[in-house]
Length: 138
Image 1 (spheres, rainbow, N blue to C red):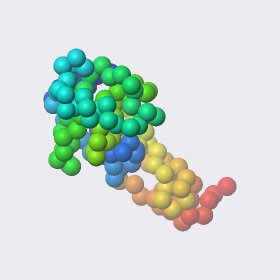
Image 2: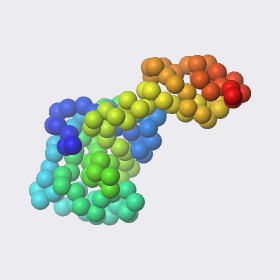
Image 3: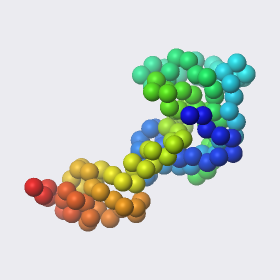
Image 4: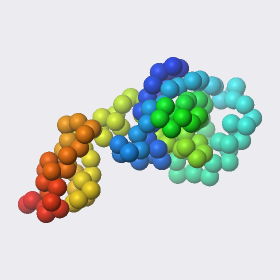
């Protein structure tokens, strides 16, 4: 999928799918590879993350993080997703699946197990595994 200009999507800082790492990003431009400026191309070529970034990208996606107030550029990942470059590197959630997973299951900070949640306001007293006590139910 390719994001649409002027649409807002979820972004997860450093690719960590947690509420504290979630921001929203407004897509400002979708630039074909052949039209990208030299500075952005050089930044992408200098990223040393062969386990993350695809060696080829069809588009460069320019966006602006709403809460962080930072500009970001996304390129293709090995799994055909989008991850931004540089200091504000993070995962773009185009189809909402990462955010959906986040709002359904979180890692309990007490027992480190998965607790079922129905909303983003997590009350760990409702953790199905430990009820927020850290004692695992069997």
